[in-house]
Amino acid sequence: MVGCPAICRDEIKEGMVHANPGFRPGPADELAMRTLPTFFAVLELLLRAGVTTVAEAAFQDRLWRPGLEPFRNLARIRVVHCTVDADVAFTRRLRRSEENPLRRAHTDPGPPDAAGSIRFHHAFDRVSVDAPYTEVDTTDGYRPGLGQIVAFINGPA
Image 1: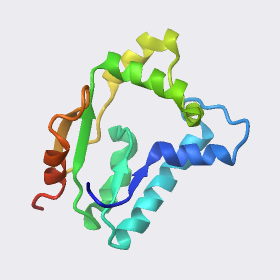
Image 2 (image 1 turned 90 degrees about the vertical axis):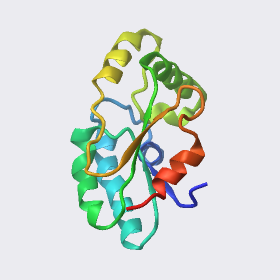
Image 3 (image 1 turned 60 degrees about the vertical axis):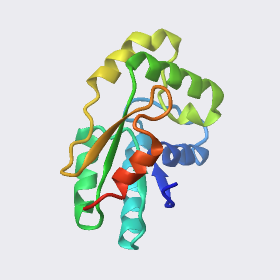
């Protein structure tokens, strides 16, 4: 619907796992540390080439703002912040880790980790860049809908 590449931080890390047999994820693991500069290097390459690009990640401010700020001169940044209740997020992460073997790249919670996952969810500090943003509730579909999200993305500078 947007017609451009989506660069996904998790997929970059999942690709790195293929080249690292026996990898075990953990907080701030070696591949996570390599993923961040790779993610921003890919974005920079595309933006310098004039390619409209979607950058997808859990954009916590302390990690992501420093990487996004330099792109202000290369792109019209728009932030779409997706929200969902902590219990729904936990259930989705459990389901993804069960259904997708590539999730082994991430430290997804197990059933006994519900309380910690909910604390982590509430401590999330979303990215704060000087750019227009919209909030989308993803509990059941998208609110606002995809048409409105695309209109926001394509809106005036």
